[in-house]
Length: 337
Image 1 (cartoon, rainbow, N blue to C red):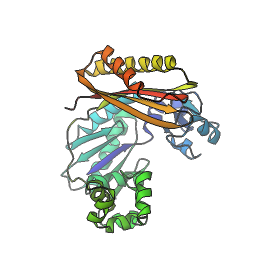
Image 2: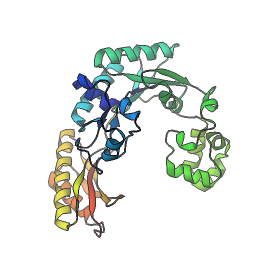
Image 3: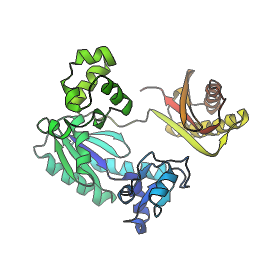
Image 4: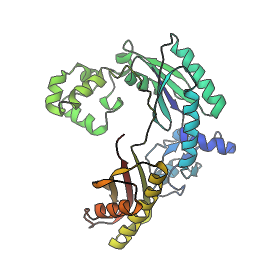
């Protein structure tokens, strides 16, 4: 299995459109305005050298890298670039499983995965101008975990033979799918390394973290994953819009007006998608930085903008509005195929 991951994807697309930015620190995020409220979506490697990371407030990124070029996100351009890359991948004799804009698994029966990886890299570079790293593994987990060792633009193989040499002493949150909260729970149980996690009896961890997740985390610690690539086209599960506001919203009328605007934008995205919506969710980030989400199942699947807007406003009313709001988001979840 191969895991193809585009290097600094959003920044790379922007640099292709503005060649004069090559070699300069580039930060993509928000509307390109340097504020504490907008966050970094992607930073070029030159910006990362200064400690700029995804999710960091843009103002903090500017303090770390004052000479960086800050650009607003252009989702339409990134979607188009991603489609071009995936089209290139599908020209190979492989099964392609798209994971998102900038990554995909490839399944192949070939005997020389490194040669295939090199051919993929060259084709992507020649056809799109973008660079990618390729991880090679004997399952999806190891292929995915191999890719960072190849970045940028390299190839790395990770199998059961070198898994523990590379990951045994690392903390559990170094694994794909293990977040900081789970890592803290594992630490409370005395599990602080991947090797310890792998040696934990699945039944013991099931009693403490749940019958599904406990054994799942043990399998991750052992580097176990799917051994087949699912060649179905990637289909979005939802469409969403969110905005971080320059000034906190405080009144009920302000909040309802802002959610209505977001709901109408989401409705336009839903109309373009041509798929019915089953649930509507609203995300609220209160000042200074507490985030909560509420959702509601619609009486019947719909694409009606008025119904979606009304549902979003109804969900908004479920929040306690006793604090200023810095961010709002609306998400429409499609009927499962």
